[in-house]
Image (tube, rainbow, N blue to C red):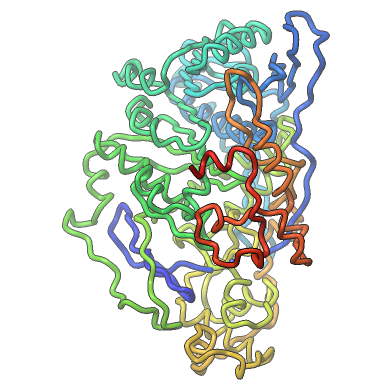
Length: 606
């Protein structure tokens, strides 16, 4: 990826070729939703040990120690709900080929939700799928007899599931209680206390006939399951931090056409704070930019595809989402030598890089190099619509159903062939002018004959197939009606260089009806507010079960720092001076930050 302050070129690794793509800069409102806190019960139930509580989520009731000995984060209930929804549809597809029908409690006739298509000006939002399914089932029923799989029952023709890093086993217990068509679930964790807790939770929820606890290294469990008959149909990896140590084993241990569910919480690395660390873990250099969350999704997909290619395998992304403080990808893994070769170039020859100079033609700034990243679609829209239809038709199944519906609706509206995005307020801030509304900017692109969409990864995102010249022409036209004080602009600044050119396109900002997406018209929950205080990543589980007081103090100090902006410079004295720690601060007593060393800091400096 070649990036400057005004524009970005992407040299991306894609299955068809190395291609030159344009990236975009971000916009939209925040909708609050209910808290995702899981209910907890004090130690009054039978089987509880001293200091334990019962955590209830979905249909599971998990015995959980009060101390931080086993990892658990209630905010990731959305993650677990979405995973259950995705695996349900995956099981429906896979088991239909094995002659098995699955039954979901509360599920009625299937309804396909399509938000992006319009007919004669009327939105075709819902289309019944029942007649087609019924006819298909009758035709298949004439050929062979189907077996019915219900929730909580062991299905001999069902799926084999592995949760490599299970912690308390909450996710696996929920699989056993909420997903039909499962043959076995292996809940593994390297911690002895976690493995013992998993076994107790399986017994407490009466799912021991499906769920088996395991205490082993997750990579070794997967490496030993590389044989065709030993592979798992579904592998779920939700590690504390980076999943990179487990990816090589995972792409080998999943069955042909099987499902990999991967979570990454090391967003500081993947979002550009440490590009060299990102390269060492994922084989890609991340860039600190506005589009960093979608770029993180494409980095992990590229890493998975690269590791799978070593074993003549390739991936097909079904759903990739950036949510809260983590990213989550669901990919299908298949085998095929010809497709693997297409990962690098269409003609099996050396790919070429982007034809750009050292500086940006728009702002004159130097390019930055990043990537390679996955450049093909990151979602399978047909599959996503099936998941969306199932969740919409059975809203009481999950506590976070409204948010799942909102996120998946936005996913179906995204332009699938456009990597990354622009951020609208970043475009306007580059030239120091006020920001047009999202509807005005989207309408201007539509009037110019280009496609445009939002992105689930950023509320102010603009995806478009319009070239950079067109976007800057629109900004120039907007600046003419909302002028900036050009005499204050430096001649070498990006703003001066961009505004010094006359627009070749005369933008029209008249609002168009199709500029407002259906997810916005229906007021779906797309970008929720923080559900609770200290809602982000939790501390790593420790043997003693305690969280260091230093970490707790740091959380209190920085929680909500953007909402409570410092207006008085004297308040900066409560923050330590980073340059003083390194011994490079030259301001002495005049420094606005604190030079007082806390306990333990002197030892670290020594």
